[in-house]
Amino acid sequence: MKIGIPKEIKTNENRVALVPSGAAALVADGHAVIVETGAGQGSGFGDAEYREAGAQIAPDAATVWAAADLIVKVKEPIEPEWPRIRPGQCIFTYFHFAASEALTRAHLASGAVCIAYETVELPSRELPLLTPMSEVAGRMAVQEGAKYLEKLYGGRGVLLAGVPGVAPGKVVILGGGVVGENAAKIAAGIGAQVVLLDISVQRLRHLSDILPVNVQLIHSNRHNLLRHIANADLVIGAVLIHGAAAPKLILREDLKAMRPGTVIVDVSVDQGGCVETIRPTTHENPTFIVDGIVHYGVANMPGGVPLTATLALTNATLPYVQQLAARGCKQALRENAALLNGLNIIDGKVTHRKVAEAFGLDYHPAESIVD
Ligand SMILES: NC(=O)c1ccc[n+]([C@@H]2O[C@H](COP(=O)([O-])OP(=O)(O)OC[C@H]3O[C@@H](n4cnc5c(N)ncnc54)[C@H](O)[C@@H]3O)[C@@H](O)[C@H]2O)c1
Image 1: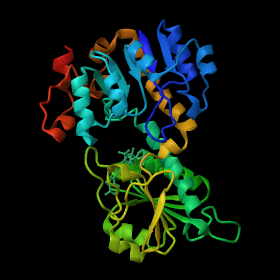
Image 2 (image 1 turned 60 degrees about the horizontal axis):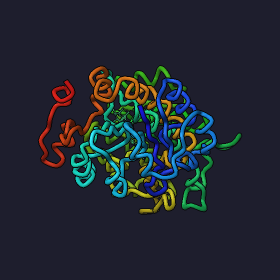
Image 3 (image 1 turned 45 degrees about the vertical axis):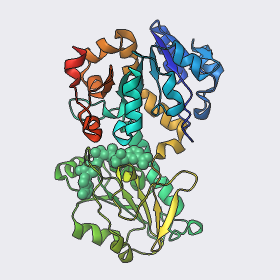
Image 4 (image 1 turned 180 degrees about the vertical axis):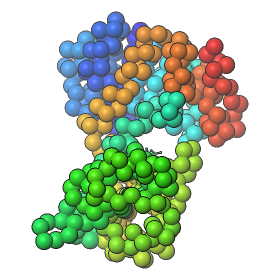
């Protein structure tokens, strides 16, 4: 099969969908890999490394899109890319269709087979292609929080680790899923006092088995939350209710009960955020202050560390790319239920219930279409 890797053109997207070792694996499987010149640059991989791996380097995006049966990307194709999509072409990437009707309609009209990373789902309900980005964001949340606690940025001027003779800072984490667990590991590792709240007692039980003893695991309710944010230095928002907007756990009036210079890193901002006063920000301008509290709301945190994020993402995606290439897209979808969950659009039809509901479109169960 011919597999195409275009350079990402969304603003500040430095990740790439395939690294040279992945290209080598696909070439060894007997496929042709066509990489747009410069595609890996933002993640530290030059054209020469792809060439050495056996890939062909294409001079521009048009060549890649025209040649490939399977396009592997990181972000959804944006408007300039839409005319390049060919009927029957398979596109494997993060799509987030429910967030954009124009994007959805463009892909319906294209006749492409659209498999979305974010809805590939294992029987355990794990989302294996979202997990690595949550791991990155969770770990990064502590690093970013620690930075914005510095006085220069409006923070309290607290060193989270403390020093001998001075107590460490307090990190409060709301939600103990993938983001929360990873944030807790890092915060505990640097010696902070860590409190993690989750509504699921089952989840708290699991975390108590795997997290160090300087992480207190507390049931999430309004009383406990207010008690702990009142003397926090860093609060990390990491809640998720699958398919729904994040619940607002910290209200504007609650900020007054917090100490000035406290930092809130709301990782759940991509689902609307769990803090009433949060809004999405960018890596160029990541923070703003409300009532003396520093708010960090970067919606694509992994984009700030593309070298790590690209490797983490491609470790997870490569086995699926190999299956799609080996079996052909439609046969791979028939054989792999997790991949079939990722199918959002095929032959001009929506095969994901939430995408159809979002725009009042007809829903066609994926199983009935690829059979
Ligand atoms: N900003 C970014 O760059 C970025 C990157 C990756 C993930 N995210 C987002 O981070 C959020 C968390 O992702 P995840 O992978 O950890 O999800 P997850 O499903 O693994 O974990 C969510 C946790 O929140 C808990 N929860 C739900 N309601 C709660 C409440 N009221 N109080 C306390 N806990 C509650 C759940 O029990 C669950 O354990 C998602 O919105 C995800 O999209 C953002």
